[in-house]
Length: 170
Image (cartoon, rainbow, N blue to C red; front, side, top):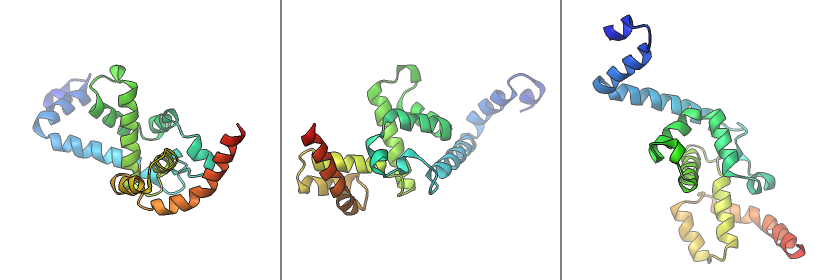
């Protein structure tokens, strides 16, 4: 620590490198606290997150780019940590890895707040309109979908009818 105090340049990095060896749990706890603060703010009710927008437009205009941009602005530390869990070099991250990373983040945020459900609604819509049987949908609900999937089915009936009408006209 004395070395860090007396060297004006890179004192923070010197202190962190010492802590990395002597007390890594302290670094982890601090990083976890920073990430928790970002996630708490992002998941707060009426925060305006795209994962909370369950309107027709919000669901059908969802994109991975929009989610990534939101995370870069509102939860950059969380995005940075998860990115490094996926790959060592962000420049070599494939599109497949990027989408899996964003899916994992959306799932984690949904676990934190039931209102972060857009991804689960999209998954349910794909299952319902992709030819899955009710048995497959029920099984999928147990694995990864929103726990109130039945309410999604009721809400989405009108939206499905509307989309079917558009598809028949097109």
